[in-house]
Length: 216
Image (cartoon, rainbow, N blue to C red; front, side, top):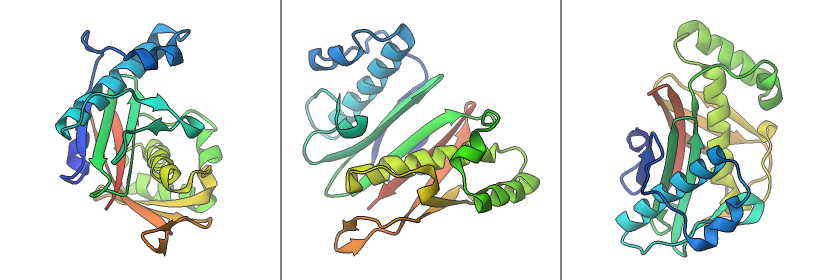
């Protein structure tokens, strides 16, 4: 599902359940040693997907450990992103010579809980969502906005190494399956130019909404 919104340079592996062959490497065990079963299954399967993607890149299996602010630590020369929610886990990886950063997020395609939209959006974004909902009510645009913002943060953090709040980027969603994110705070210098925003793609299906950014 997610591969249709990513460029060919990005390897995507996804799962809609928790396969019995998914296991953790010893170094990963300590991070979920006391976790409840649901958390452990998510953690295990998404790393199983990541190792499959590493194999498709021609790289050996490696532990995927949480690093700074919990962001996954990838092998040298690899960029990647992972996501998991009810009924879905995915990992996407690419060579850093091809992709500068990548960020993905998936969520159930349902409305945000009451009160959440105000906490994660700007006033003009809410006006934008109301207009989109009038034209295309079959999409839960509030959940899509949240998903897009999560993909922005996951793309931002490996470059900036600092927090990006929900109000620090303005999202514009488009009915053609794309979105843009304008940064409202100074961005890091990437390839000699200050980063001012991202472009991404989104899709729905299988009861999910998925957003992805892959910056060449």
